Length: 155
Image (cartoon, rainbow, N blue to C red; front, top):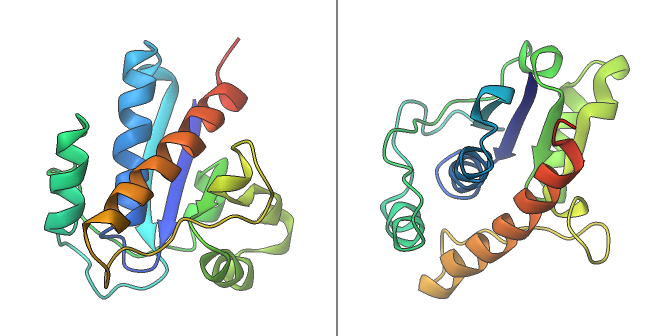
C-alpha cells in the first residue's frame, strides 16, 4: 500500500483538489487498491467542512468529484502513517518540517517537485482570486499527481 497525504492551509481548496485528482488517476490506472490517498490542512479552521464550492465546481467540470471530502488538520500520527506527505507550497512544507519528527522528514516534499520543471514550484492559493486561480490549481495538481503516480506506481 502506498500512502499519500496532500497538505495545504485549511484543506478546502488545493489539497482536496489534489486528493480528488490523485484518486481519479489511480482509479483510471486500475490501482485504487494499491493507494491510500488523503488530504489535510496545516490549520484546523475548516475541520469537517466540504471543499470550497468553487474548487468543487471547477473540479467537477474536469470530471473530479470532491463532494464527499471533508477538511481536517494534519495530526502527529500522519507523519508515520503516510509514505508521501506533499505540501502545496513552501509555507506548508516549512510548517510540516517543524512538526514532523526528524527521522520522518524524508517523507515531506512539495507536490510540484514531482513534476517536470524547476524545483520549488508552488501551487498558488486561489482562495482570494477569481476563477482562473482554480483552473491554475487544477493544471498544477494534474501535472504533479501524474508525475507522482509515475514515480510511485507499483511495478
